[in-house]
Length: 99
Image 1: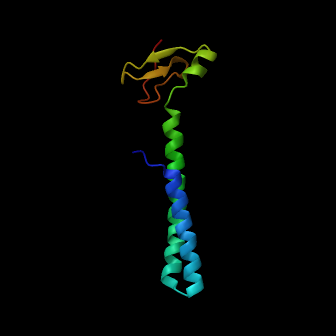
Image 2: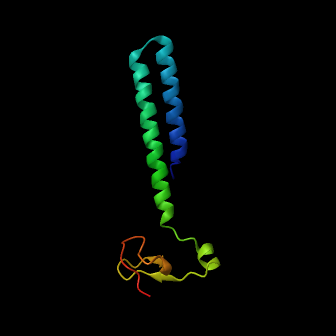
Image 3: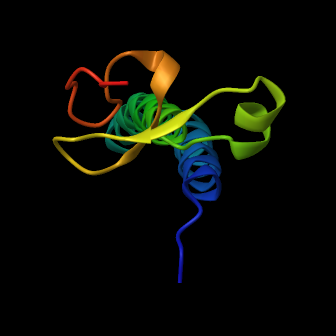
């Protein structure tokens, strides 16, 4: 089962806002500051999750775009992973790609 981190982020944000509201309404500093901490944690979690997703997708080859632009696929001699030859360096290990 794959975890959808966007849903986790939304749930954490909702819990934090509810706890801030309850802490303010009932005058409980502990609940209020816990909610504020949870808001800060949720923001960092969301930024981490979005960055991870962006870098993960950056390493995937879009084969439709490769064929549209007439690019050449090659295999890295160092790590044996598939790359676009026009990139000059391997996306995975940084080794220079040889024609």
